Length: 165
Image 1 (cartoon, helix red, strand yellow):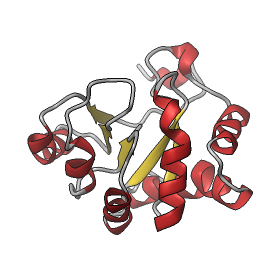
Image 2: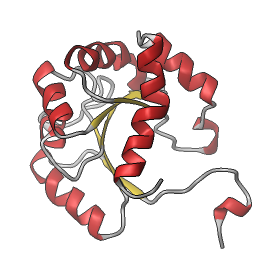
Image 3: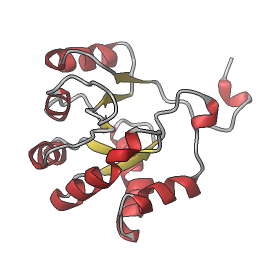
Image 4: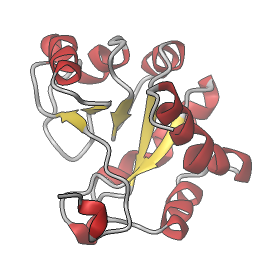
């Protein structure tokens, strides 16, 4: 059975490493790849949940991570490492996690790190339109050129690097 018979969305196998001990993020990311995850995301140090300190650091230093989701008050150094390791930082559509978007956007733009807009979807009603993603990026303070990158160029680059596009 193919879910695409019912919904007009592309399904990509992936994993989000969430609330795990920071020191085993690399091991978990490698295990996720072994199990078939094409995209590996790490749940970052959002300001609205008690995420283990060091999660952002370990995520941006892990070559198997593609996206650091809702990284909250990410440091400049962590964003620089994310850039060096080609790990995108997420601007989140999710209530609560989105409170850090302005900081994440500012730090990422300062160092040239990649940004993506994501939903952190837990249910179908969490999915958003392109127009809403645009508004989230704009609300985070991205200029038009950076919005285009966050909504189109950067996600496509991730998919191409994984052989999905």
